[in-house]
Image (cartoon, rainbow, N blue to C red):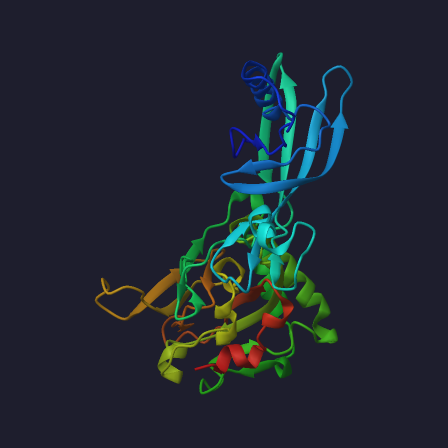
Length: 354
C-alpha cells in the first residue's frame, strides 16, 4: 500500500488549566509531539485536508513491534436548512447543539483506514479509503442540479491479469447463440436486424446464461469500474445481437439515454453508468461534447474483448456491424451500473428511450 497522506493532524483537546507562559509553552510542545503520533491504541480523531474523521475502532497486531490499524469515519455533515456546503460537525453543532442531530442534518458515512507501524526503528503511517464512499463533496450546481463532472466515455482494454481470452469470449458467444429465438426481441423500429435478450436479468430458464454473463461482466466491474466509481455497487446484465450494415441510429433516427432524468439529481459519482462489452467488434454512435467537434455525432470503435463505459448523460445508439452481405449475428454484453437499485431502467426503456 502506498500512503495517500503523509501526515494526520490529531484533533485532541488541550488542557484548560491556568499555568505560567513558560509552562504552557513546554506543555504545548509536548502535546504537539503526542498529537501527531497514532502509534498507540489511543482513540484520537484526525483531520485530513480539512476534513475531520472520528475513530470507530482499533486493532493491534504484533508483540514487541506493534501495528495499529484504526478505523475512521468521516465527521462531515450537510445542513439542509443552510444548504450551502458540507461542513465539519463541530462547526454545525455550535448552532444546532453538540449532542443533537436534527433531521435536517445529513451525515457522511465515508470511511478511512489508518495503518501505523514501525519499520527499522522508524514510525510509519499510511491512510487509505475504507469500504464506504464519501458523499461529502461540495457540489457545483447549475440550475439546482449538480453539474456533470464525469468523463462521458472510457474505452476499457482488459489486462492479461483478468484472465479473459479467446476461449472465454467464444464460450460466452456460444451460450448466447444457443438461447431459444423466442427470447430474442426486436429493438424498436429495427426489424429483425437488431435484437436484445428479453428478461435475461430475471427469467429462470435463462439462469445459467445469466450467471455466465454476470461472471464475464464482473471482471470489468471488479478490475476497473468499481475502482473508478466505488459508489456504484449494483449491476444488471443484458445481451444484444445485430447483423448487417444499418446502425440503430440509421433505423431509429435518434440517439437515446439509458436512464431517466431523475438520476441527474445525484452527485456525479453516484449517477449510473452503462457498459457494453464486445464479444464481436462493434461501433457505438454517440453525441459529441464540446464545440470543438466538427460533427455533433461521433463514432467509437470497440474491438473484441474491449468495452466502452459511458455515463447516464451520454446519448448514444448502436453502430453498424459490417457489410450488408454479412448475415451472421454479432454479439455484445451490456450492463446497467447503479448506486441504488431503484435507478435500474427496464430493458425495454433502455432500447426505446428518445
